[in-house]
Image 1: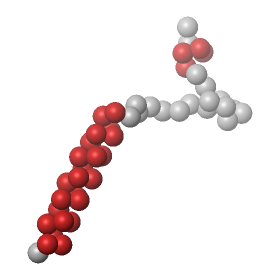
Image 2 (image 1 turned 30 degrees about the vertical axis):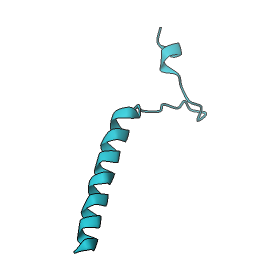
Image 3 (image 1 turned 45 degrees about the vertical axis):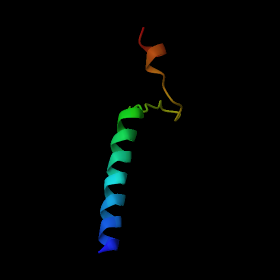
Image 4 (image 1 turned 135 degrees about the vertical axis):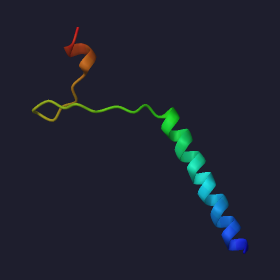
Length: 46
């Protein structure tokens, strides 16, 4: 029974951590040119 309680608590803690990280980390898409260098969209689109 103790194992089940610990398992549920760890599962909930991981869910909270995942929600926190998804809200704090900036999501985006990296864009590369033909030479595999990172394109900066702000510079290329005035």
